[in-house]
Amino acid sequence: MIKTIEWTDEGIRMLDQRLLPTEEKYLMLRSYEEVAQAIKKMVVRGAPAIGVSAAMGLALGASQSVGTSVADLEDDFSYMCQVMSQTRPTAVNLFWAIERMREKFQREKAAGHETETIKASLIEEARNIFTEDIQANRAIGHFGAELISDGDTVLTHCNAGALATAGDYGTALGVIRGARDAGKRVAVIADETRPFLQGLRLTAWELAQDNIPVTVITDNMAGHVMKSGKVNVVVVGADRIAANGDAANKIGTYMVAVLAKKHGIPFYVAAPITTLDLSLKTGEEIPIEERDGREITHIGANQLGPDGVNVHNPAFDVTPNDLITAIITDKGVARAPYVESLRILAETDTAGATG
Ligand code: MRU
Image 1 (cartoon, rainbow, N blue to C red):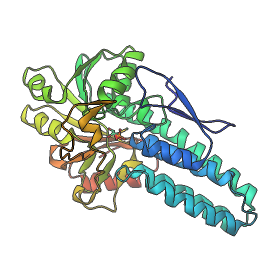
Image 2 (cartoon, rainbow, N blue to C red; image 1 turned 135 degrees about the vertical axis):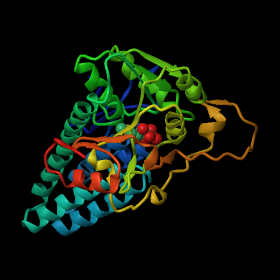
Image 3 (cartoon, rainbow, N blue to C red; image 1 turned 60 degrees about the vertical axis):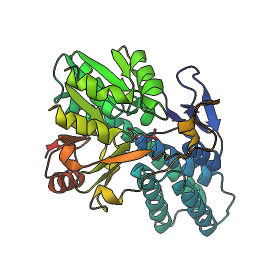
């Protein structure tokens, strides 16, 4: 099983995703600052994985605080939360995880617990977030498998697999693994996903490890491939989903959704409930990360573009809800009108609903 992130007695062990697929190297992160840097620099990436990493980073940071009173620990912890929240702006799972850790702190404090007890509880909470993410992905796989037919070829964009989550199934790839585990034959077409190449480097690597047939195409081939009848269904992940179902995901996802609509191919978004941001009415309000232009002008150390060329590098785009056939969550499958179906799923305690 791919171990994206792991809590150990020594620190947080993380697979350095920047080096995949040619090098499988694990880093041991020994402070919350190192974890924050790892998120910023894309050692770890993918919305759920970012959330789990942030929670573990905060637990690690709190455990190392030298504050002797609960008030000192709280000051340190608040500062760490602030640092963590400035790592990446789009994936809401980051802010969700920070908020959940803050709430845990406040409950412990209100219960009159001492610093050592609070520190231990924060570690337990981070580990719970990790375990819950794996369970959520299994549930997504279970619900999503029903939408895949035996013999389907699924097109996906970016990497929404084990590497983008706490590990194991993943979200979009969880649907594919769920279908495979339900006995269906399924093949995958992976967009390479310029400029960071998560599809080529990560999705292709992950699926090959799992013996799921995968074919890589460049992003500009998706239309041709769909028109040629080679794609039965599209499944992608999400970084933040607004109350109306508009979904932010890796740049290029919107283009794929438009093409899927044109060719009558179902377009599914797979994400845990923790990726919902019901405080945002529409996707217009989702902050889109702008990344270093070097990701476009260079591949590794090789410069491809002219010196000083202007570059625009938005890392995400928003797919409007009318292009989304359904949103597959760990609580069930939501369909339009999403304002209603997502709200119902968000309020569902146990898995099983179908909106
Ligand atoms: O910039 P990244 O690699 O963090 O972006 C990741 C994506 O856009 C994924 O598709 C998304 O987070 C879903 S991951 C389960």
